[in-house]
Structures are given as C-alpha cells and as structure tokens.
Image (tube, rainbow, N blue to C red; front, side):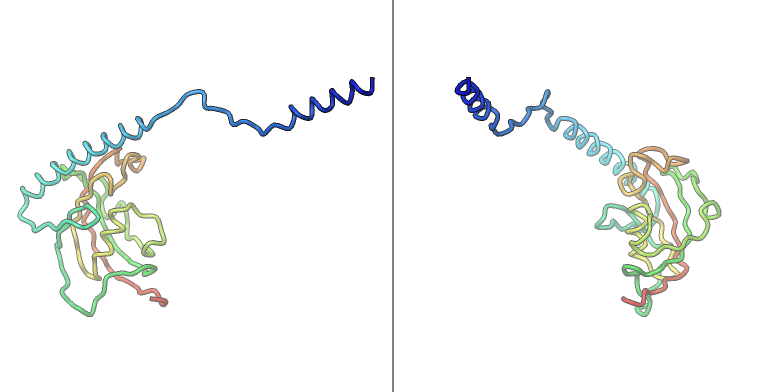
Length: 181
C-alpha cells in the first residue's frame, strides 16, 4: 500500500511540475483598423488642405506655412529685436476669436475673454499653443488650423464639431518671462 502511495505521489509530482503554458488568443486581430484609420485621416487631411488653400488663394494676404502644419499671416507685425517670442514657462496674456473656414464666428473674443497661459504648462489646443510661440507682444496674427491642429476628432464638445478646421485671430497683449529662463 505504501508503495502504491509513493508511486502515485511521484506521478503527481512529475505531471504537476510542468511550466505553465501561455494561452492563445481566441481571435487574431491584424492592424486593419489602424490601417483604415490612417487612410481615412490622410484623405481628411488632403480635403482640408484643398479647402484651406482655396481660402488662401482668395485672399490677398501673404500666408506662411509653419513647420507644424498650419497657415498664418501677420495682421500686425512687430519688427523690434528687443521683443522676444515666449519660451517654456513664460506667461502670455492674449485675446483670440474662433471662426469656421466659411468665416462664420464660432466664439468671439468676448465669449472667450482674455486668456492667461503659461507656455507649455497648461491646456490649450495644439495649433494655438504652437502659434503663440511665433508671436511677440503687440502682434496680431490670423491662423488657419486644420482639424488635426485644432480640436481633432472630438471637437470641443460644445460649438466646434468633429474634424473642424478653424481660423483664429490672436493678439498677444503681454509676455511675462519666467525667472528661470
């Protein structure tokens, strides 16, 4: 009897000490969703670019294109070398409005009110954050942001819908330099 128990214990020990096997997924997903999303976004970006370029051609302003992928022109440019563009942590006081590509006003300067923004330390949509880095105190710039640089897929969940390109006119009132810069 003792022999049988010992044999049974050895058998259980031999089969019970196997390394755990990893489970295989029930279904295998490919990158098809991501690939489709990338294609959809490329088409959307191309359509927006065509619309924006038509607007630019219809105006007599000298638009520049940023490295970040938005367009802008200076309504009022300050040529002074003594004024600097903001750096990380600088506090910017500015006013702006938001329009759709067709020119209809979405948010007025009065709706938004004067903003105070610590450069790269607070929430602001990507295009505006990057656009402010190009400006000096006293300048007014009109930006055209593709939806990718504006509020993107989600919009602002209020007046700005999904995938909406925007036109913003921004005036920098003051830039207070961060003491560590």
